[in-house]
Every structure is written in structure tokens, then in C-alpha cells.
Length: 386
Ligand SMILES: [Zn+2]
Image (tube, rainbow, N blue to C red):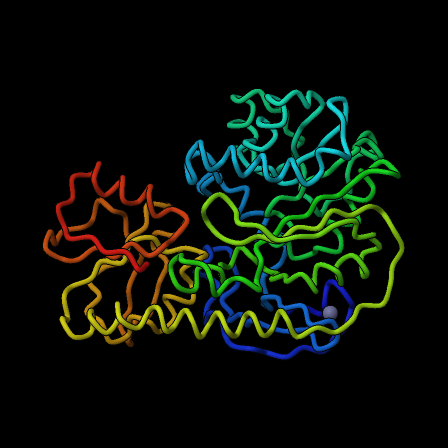
């Protein structure tokens, strides 16, 4: 399990609750062990404590089976452009069109492409996934292929005026290392923009219950823990704020410069938010599950992934589940226990009962699953959990 808090270094931890009993549900190469939502009692940071290593996650994200996140595909053009403009406004006055900009773990390159098309001609991105780099190349975006935890090559040292980490930091186990490396790549007066989901607003999100507990997010931040992040990692917090991302959910950002390390201050804001979200999620789920339990209709659960782990941990135990479906080959064949019965995740092609109700589980790929159900010609009734 995690040996110490990656922000403050404390070796103490408080387990808040079990997130899943078997990490293999993230992929075959993850260890067969449980994971817990955990609080550091010294600084108050909430993180997922597990036996997996950064290498397991590197493999997960760089696998050709992993789905590269496409903003335009998920949020549509209008919302995505408005969102990217919101981000740009956070540091527009700190940079010029000549600034060297790096988007950290930029995925399929959407944000860098946005910067380039707005005249920020020295923009590029960092990625671990070759598949993402290839997609980005098709958009005219240059990708440097390394992992955020690896030491950056010499030629990247002190190269950038601005590094953006837009929903990337919370995906890394070794966030201390990631920030150390970013500081190496920044010019002495450069800026680091960090944007993460806002845990203090999880309970307000209208997405599928428990979505924000996604396994891809190892860390959960609130405005207070963003301050601790700066103190612990030697970053001076210039501004911070909260806003609503692409008509989707609340986010939190901090704009930092290189500074000096300071003592962290304990805050219970992470823990309070995480426990509150668990309560509101269970409450929102209850009417759906009660109906399935009462009708005992056959259910086909579609979309088994990182964001549905807690949803799959006990929620459907008393329902009449027929099949588990996911189109991602990486997940097919994985074993799940629901209500004491064993299931294997199967390919959409295997759906045989045209009267069973398909329940679309994930939030982030909801629309593309709906489209696939339609494209594949299934006439089953379809329900969503939001
Ligand atoms: Zn800590």
C-alpha cells in the first residue's frame, strides 16, 4: 500500500471506506488486492490507497486499448471551446503569443490545438500514450512522449513559460515527482496551471452516482488542499478559483510560480466532501435500484470501468443481473461478483436477450455508448442512472 502521503510525507493514514475489493477490475495487470479511500491525518489530503504502482497506471494509460479522452467528442464543440477559453482567461495576461507552453498529459491534443489556433504558436504537449500522440499529430500537435514521473530530458529543462496540468495531476500516484519534474521544465519565472475536479462540489454533480470516485483519480482536492499542495511542493500560489467545466462538473484551479516549501496545515475539507458525496450518491441511486429490485427485470449492465467501481460494489446485489458488457477488450473476461453470483465482462456482440433492460453505467462515455447501442441495432429498453 502507499507508504506515505505524497504531499506532506506523513506515514499515518485513516481509512474512510473500501473502494473496491479487487483492483483487477482496473485491468488484468493490476494486483489482486483491495483499495481504500484514505485520509492523511496530518494534512487532510484524501487519496486512494492501493497496492498498484505508477507502472500499473502507466501500462493502463499507454495500452492501445485505453480510450484516449477527446474533449470535442465528449462535450461537443461549443462547450469545449467555451471551456478552453475559460482556462485561457486564467493566465492570458501572464503569457504572450511567443510563450513556450507545455500541456502536461494532454491526451489527444485538443487543448494544445486550441492554443495553436489562437496564435500561441510555441505550444506542445507531453504524453505517455503513443496512440494519443498519433491522434494529436493528425491535429498538427507536437507530442513529447515521456511519462510525467520520469526525469525530463535535458533539452526540456527551463524551456517553458507555462505548463498546464488540466485534469492530469490527480491521475498520477507520485504527484510529488510530477510537480518536481514540472518545476525543472519551467523557466525560473514560469507559471504552472493546475486544474483538478473540485471535491468540495462533488455532491452537486448531476452525473451518475459515485462517478467522481473514479479509480483514475488517485487524489481528491479542495481549495484548502490546493494550498497545501503549494506549501509542500515549493510552489507559490498566485491565484486559485472554482468554475463549472463544459456544462459538466465543478473544477478547481491554482496558478502557481516556483516558490519555497512551507509547513502544511491540516484541513478536514477533503474528508468532509468525500463522505458527503458518498451519502448523496447513495440517496440518488436508491429510487433506481428499488425499482429494479421490485420489478426483477433482467438487467444488462453496460460500461464497466474505472468510474463505475463503487457502483459495482454491492449496488446491484438484489437485482436480476443477466450480463456485464463492455466494448473495451481490456475489460472483457474480468470477473465480478454481484449478489454472490460470478460474472465475466463480455463483448456487446454477445447480447442475446432483446427484452432485457440495458443499464448504461458510466457518465463520461454515456453518449457514445447510447450511440453504439443504436448503431448496433439493439432494440432493448435502455436506462441511465442519472
Ligand atoms: Zn499529508
